[in-house]
Image 1 (cartoon, rainbow, N blue to C red):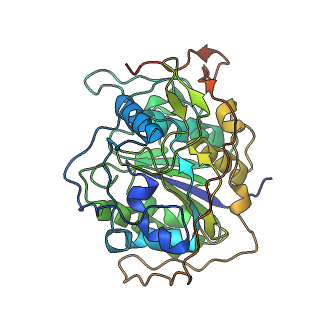
Image 2: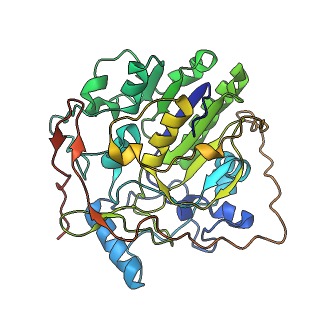
Image 3: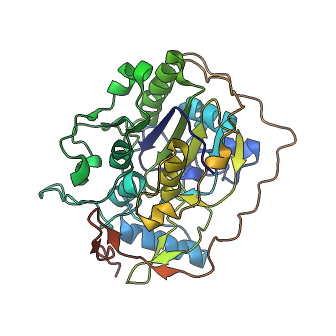
Length: 375
């Protein structure tokens, strides 16, 4: 199914699980915890969330023992009221997962191009790697669609792509507000700290940057012809109570995909609201972008074969605009009695397969990622 829309905006924030951020959605029947200790804002520390920390958390979850992850939740309506409103009035993908069970860079790369040659964050004390991999942004440009990457000062993560290096379409994140009236067909947005919500940032400040951008786009007349996707790169060391399907593993036989659940909100004038319980991961974001913009396959099987969320679009719908930036938000009233959460759906595959190689733009392959083995 292909539905062409005017604009697609993908926001990528940092380091929170679905249980950690959206306890508010339990009142709407989402499968989220609602009785964990409340997380102070801002968080006091950045907890470990690399591959080794993930493996420890995964083992504890599978063994039903005490979690080594941070077992807390933010009070959504108090510190993230705009997110709570978007989740309750848009599409809330309750079983969306990080693409890989690890930390930031691999999951950002999965969002930009559906694959990652690394399982870790490249050390900042060394020259940063550059790979000639396909990207959604470059793919859009090659097919005549305007695009921009709105990033922080280091152009992370698009600086890892040879295809995108030096492009004038890579600008600072706040530029999206000024561009709202003349929005490119595809926008992907990242923020520098503290607006990326990466601990130890005040998460309300990051939410407000998203709010400001969405409000500017809506005020410019693009609410009804724009689809917004808002997600978080990885789990950040926070607990989540749902065990995700084991579809893929690394050579050390540790589950790679799916990673832990992370929030995904999909909203805009044409988006069907409600809680969606299907399994998805970051590659589904890319697949949905292709379908929304009418683009051909990227040439990355992991992304091209991913399930799309295009069915959440109803071209005849016209959802009301969210509250204007800085206004008082009145949360919608949840249904009574409170709906019972849906059981998690069966896994999309019955067996786990080894992670595959990485496709480059010239048709050659890089070996499967294996640079952070778990001992």
